[in-house]
Image 1: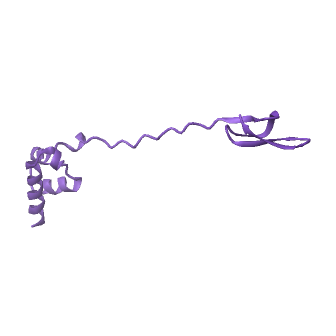
Image 2 (image 1 turned 60 degrees about the vertical axis):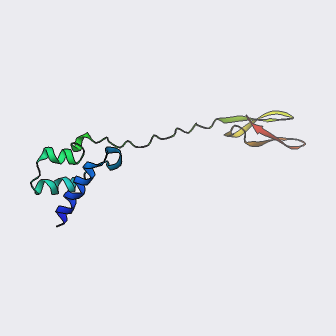
Image 3 (image 1 turned 120 degrees about the horizontal axis):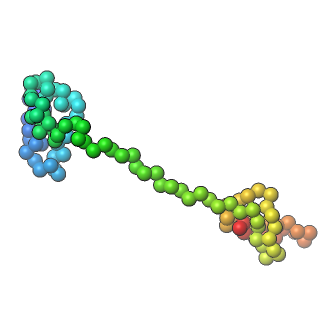
Length: 107
C-alpha cells in the first residue's frame, strides 16, 4: 500500500510545474521504484532526470577577513615612541616619559 502512495505522490509531483515540484527523488525512492518494476527511463522522468544531473551543493564561500595591521610606534602629542609589543593600528597606547605616561594611538 505504501509503495502505491509513493508512486502516486511521484506522479502527482511530475504533473506540477518544475518550479513548484522540484521532483527530485531520494536514492531510497529510486530503489523502491526500481524494485517495483518501474523502467529506469520512467524513474528518471518522474524524478527529474538521472541522479548524476543534480547540481552539487557548493559550500558557502568563506568571507576573507582582512588581516589586522600591526603598529610598532605609539604616536602621542609629545612625539612617537617605540612599543615593546606590536598592537593593532588605532589601539590606545602610552609613551612613558620622565614626567609620566602620555596617552597616544598605535600607528
